Image (cartoon, rainbow, N blue to C red; front, top):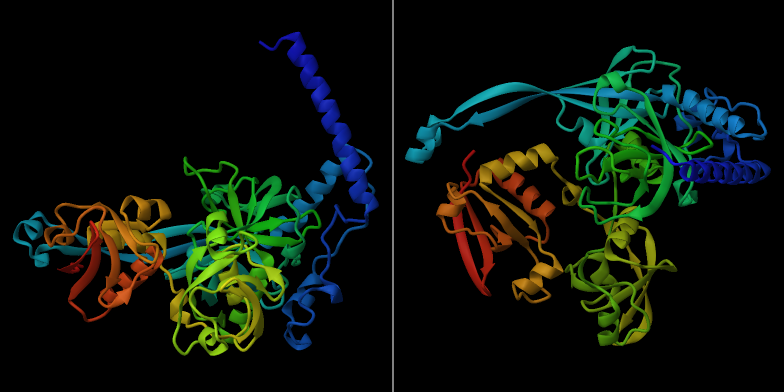
Amino acid sequence: MESSLERVTKSIFMTLLAVLTLWGVHNVTESNVNLSGLASLGDSSPWDNSLEREDSYLWEDSSKVRSSEQVPILSLRDFNNAIIDIAERTNPTVVTVTTKQTVKVRQRNPFSLFFNDPRFDQEREFQRSGLGSGVIVSSKNGYIVTNNHVIDNADEIIVRLYSGEELEATIVGTDPGSDVAVLQVESKDLPAIPMGNSDNIKVGEMVLAIGSPLDERFAHTVSQGIISASGRSYLGLNEFENYIQTDAAINPGNSGGALVNLDGELIGINTAIASRSGGSQGLGFAIPVNMVKTVMEALIKDGRVSRGFLGITLGGEVDQTMAKALGLPNASGFVVGDVEPGGPAEDAGLQGGDVIVSLNGNPVKEWLDFRVAIASLTPGSEIELEIYRDGKKQTVDVVLGERDADAVASIDNDDMESLREELGFSVTDLSDAMRGELQLRDDVNGVVVDEIDQTSMAYRQGLRNGDVITVISGERIENTRQFYDSMISFRDSDEEVLLLKIIRQGRNIYVAFELVS
């Protein structure tokens, strides 16, 4: 039972909260921010200079969603009604995406293990269904943005509108590196959401997340929260990461759905969660809409994404100890590891051991952010790098090349799990802590075997837990994504025997085995 003191305390707290909320909303209203309706892109859209007028499907779409009259926020009820208005106007622009895929699985027979002969195994087929969300961004052309992992490898894609109508969708283009995909449906006058500007978001800003979590019965679920952080990377989800973090409830099935601001604008595509339970724990991540726009425009116009390429590898992040050792004034930036022969970096004179601290006048905080920034630029762009070499600051101008599309290829979680079963072992990235425990040099890169089936071919041929895989059939390996991509390429090739170079207790060892499929 609640005590009198607890009830009084709670009442005071709620009163203070209401006063603070009204004060905050009043200031927002005084700043002429439209809380009650959807903003039209109009001619002030950040897309104005990126597309020719005749190709601008977004301008035409924006006229379909009319902003309502500015309504003063004078009470919590007004504020509540404004949130309802935003939800009612944006919900119809979100769709449920269902997929079907025919999967072939090799069923292991005990005799195949006993006789070491895969001919005893049998192959069977089954239908796999998937569920996700999408956002309508073009009324005239029927373009829908979603996550690549929602529709990857799908044989059939069905889009269900807010009205319940179902439409078959085709894939316009996909970009695994950013996890963005563009679909198209044959329908006119669809309600399309206006695009916001994710560069202007603020931590603490209120947002709505809309999607179809867990099951089609829960389609068009709206949850509310705030922006908890921006610029999140190192999640290991995609090649290029720069996520918005939110505590708005996001669950499996929300992938590809909308993250909406209080102007009713799309500011992100909900993509992933961090969770110990598998459900929402207030750690959701969305791809910023500005990144989505860039990728979407490239996929619609060219069918692919052209990314800038510099041609360097990471030699190490600069912490306080590294800064002191290199004689740097601040702990920022990163050390260049290898410079690719004949690449843009070498042509510009960059060298291994250089410390990059600035890109086009903007401070470089860490390697992954730098990679995303370079990849977001078009090939042929000229950039200015501020570096330290031998303790002296200098400026280097570089003309970017084009990143090989194969370099950003990736596989989904189901393919990865299937490959683990075929290999009989799994690997994890080589962290600094592991490098210390295994007494490896700082320049050693690779992946660590963290779990291996003792009945697998790899185990029989000598692979063990704790082995560090550095090379696969002549290809150097730096992380788990590269490892699994390399394994996929090997599996699809005509090669029969896999050769691994590993490090065990400080010694280089070679292990060869057949990949049984």
